[in-house]
Image (cartoon, rainbow, N blue to C red; front, side, top):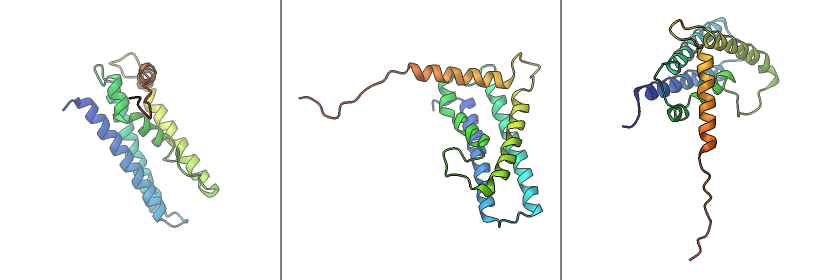
Length: 158
């Protein structure tokens, strides 16, 4: 009750993105340091699955009468995109030197894919998904800045 279909779909996409990303991290931790070709094939399939989810998220955000600013804030899109683009390392422990080349490769691939999807031109709209995402982010930031700050007192005067 109180949630629009667009918000529910965005939340589901964010949850799906997180789940698939977590599965990649879990599988990577379970593998030995020598990566097999099967694991690389699985990784490519998973990355394609992540790309599809990102594309769906951006198309959902690009709807004419899509989510409101408050719904955008509550959807978890920002955190999901941050986690996706940072390959799950943002705010986590430091990445070991041995894993940096693979992480850079994966992050570079994700950035390229995100940019290609986000800057694609939808013939039904004049704006790219990236422009609409930036508008949503700016709107969210300005609305969060307008919320009043309420100070609570630790002790009340009787």
